[in-house]
Amino acid sequence: MMKNRILSSGISGFIVLAIAAAGAIGFPHQKTFRREVSIVNIPFSALDKDGLPVGGLRAGDFQVFENGEPQEIEFFSETAKSEEVILTIALLIDTSGSVKDKLRHEIETAAEFLREILRPEKDLALIMQFDSEVNLVQDFTQNQADLVDALKSLRAGGDTCLYDAVYLAAEEKLRTEAGRKVMVVISDGEDTSSLVSREEAIESAQKSDALIYGIGVRGRRSPGGFGDLERFAEQTGGAFFSPQAEFKEIQETFRSIGRDLRGQYSLAYVPTDKRKDGTFRKIEIRCHKRGVRIRARRGYYAPAGNR
Image (cartoon, rainbow, N blue to C red):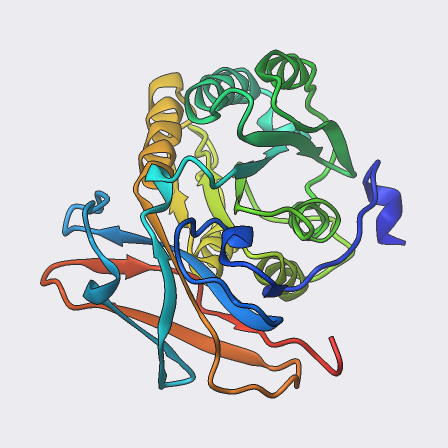
């Protein structure tokens, strides 16, 4: 039933990746495993008291815990400085009837964001719109002109199936991608017509290893209810922003997301708990440097059975 809401299909993957070499997840020049292992890869942000990225940190500055148990960091990278790591962005734009007066600013600022953040012939992005249905307007591409043309084609009308959009972007498009995976979701309100629940959408995003950046655009008359976007960001390690429906405010929000993406780190570990029980395992990253706050996803789902 859900596949009728998107014009594409994909193959599911898992957040715990089986790899044969460290380079497969973007940690160049480090250890290589000669046998298949399960490894948990966590992209995260290290922020100062003003919420700005802190650069120059090393693996020894961090400690990672799974369900309260310390884990050994096997790989570490200041991701934004690694040329090998691909950035993959799914840009989801609410085109329900209520965004009609805001859509032009959203399109213009989103186009600027993609032009600034995507490295030519390296990174990928797609455009999805959601109202009463979810439509893939532009599939993954490195061509920025195609992405901008797709944005310009958007028109407003219909209800808001926010959960369906997040679920399908994660399940059908991001799950099988490699590198850093980011979902940027722009909306002016709450879900009104999805077939899946909010928790199902969050679980799908977590299993796809995607960070969600939520942009809740506030109109003059209706402040909007953005609890869903906030929870998506909180549970996946992204961030939530709530700008006024004005060009400069939305523009600054996209620039903040760009700064955050340029200042990210990644670490990976082989879990001490080897059980393939499909359970959700809580993750906590601590930094030994004073005044540094970590923003990362809350956990991951272990593989199930013989996967």
